[in-house]
Amino acid sequence: MKFNTKVIHGNQQAEPHTGSVNVPVFLTSTFAQKTPGQLRAGYEYSRGGNPTRQALEDALASIENGARGLAFGSGLAAIDCVLKLLNPGDEVIAVDDLYGGTYRMFTRLFSKYELKFTFVNFDDISKISTLLNEKTKLIWIETPSNPLMKLVDIEAVANFTKGKDILLAVDNTFASPYLQQPLDLGADIVMHSATKYLGGHSDVVAGALVTKTPELGEKLHFIQFASGGILGPHDSYLVLRGIKTLALRMQRHSENGIKVAQFLEKHPAVGDVFFPGLESHPQFKLATKQMKAFGGMVSFNFKSGKKEDAIHFLERLQVFTLAESLGGVESLANHPAMMTHASIPEEKRAELGITDDLVRLSVGIEDIEDLLQDLEQALKA
Image (cartoon, rainbow, N blue to C red; front, side, top):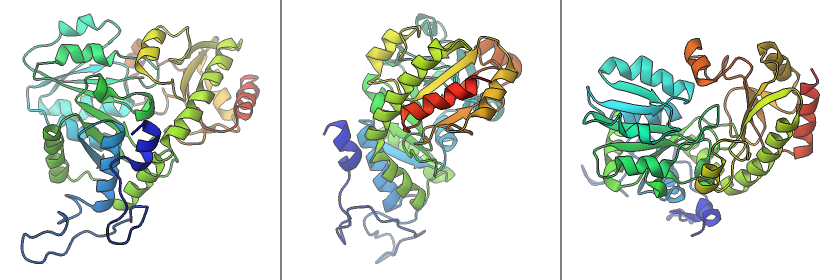
């Protein structure tokens, strides 16, 4: 199947008992058994498996070209599950420009359990090889990154981990499977905050993992079952419904995203614009090689460098909504230093380039004329 067909039909079938085209929401915690240990259709208790969640997990595996999909109560619950594959003394190499919640989990939670985290700029992939040792067990990357839209060459990193006892995990939230499929480029695990583009309607909090092999999927499923960070059936239904329109939405997000980025790049009040689809982006060639299109995430700062200008701009927006999160059909605006990345120490933010005048936009699927007009009137402030 091609991708547009996969999001609707991939690993999916009508409900076998009634023929329902849409998967029912199985609101049950447990399943009747004919005799002890003899399960009906393999379901015993909804923490271990639920037909609605299973339908979503099968769809996730299909659209990422993976062997096993797993659905979680949040993106952070999915990351938590991956880290529980590790043992005390193991080392993790992570991209330095990453989501604040991931950074917080790595540095304030799992570092207490004798895991070592090294945060690295992946611009020069050759430097990564010098950091690898027998204790390195996981490489964690985001591409595009949050919020500076930096890219990592997934295939190049995978070449370093190939044949070694090192897992490569990619946070694919900003791209979505429509734009980028890391497993095809050599990754072992793909993670999504399914709250974002997979759900697509800002009405659910969810996370997802997809693995390259069934064996790795089974290990993660055991951790999910033992730890309990599952996604409920109704939320599973919402994400599955969202996936069915993923291709159409991502096409529109990408069309609007490039126009917003081009508009901002020419505006006299705007400083730097961070968007992989601009030829001015230092990794534009990698973006064209690795991504199908460039999505709807755009960040920028102000020529003035003033935090006050960013705040006044955000306060004046009318079509864009000032809010956390991203990836919904509606356009959102965010101040990373005070919102999504506030958990990263100020000096670390400065080192990374997450300045106080940085604004992150999640460009929605509204009419582009309305979005540009809203940006123009807010920038007049």
